[in-house]
Image (cartoon, rainbow, N blue to C red):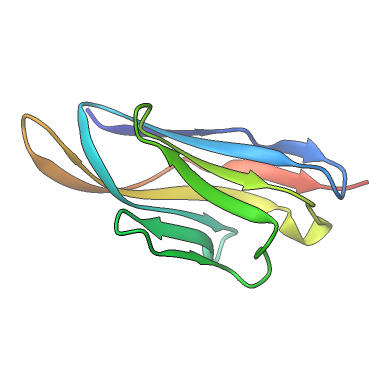
Length: 118
């Protein structure tokens, strides 16, 4: 069974940092697309594909960074210089494939709350 579990949210003060994690499990063969969204409207925060293309929302450029540890099948969102307007529930989204059986999945994480407040 393929699962995606998020972690790393919390309460921080403005200017501080957080790192969100999104771990996929279940005989993963490859992760093709990884992305982070936030809020009820699912605003795109960052997106990266296996081909190497990466996109960031203008509001987070220079502060947030998306990355992947392929050995751990885990995607990260490093968030620096956090602002109160970054407060939201953050969701990861993965497009991946599995081995035996070979299947493709589009999966959402359960969401993790990030609150930036003094």
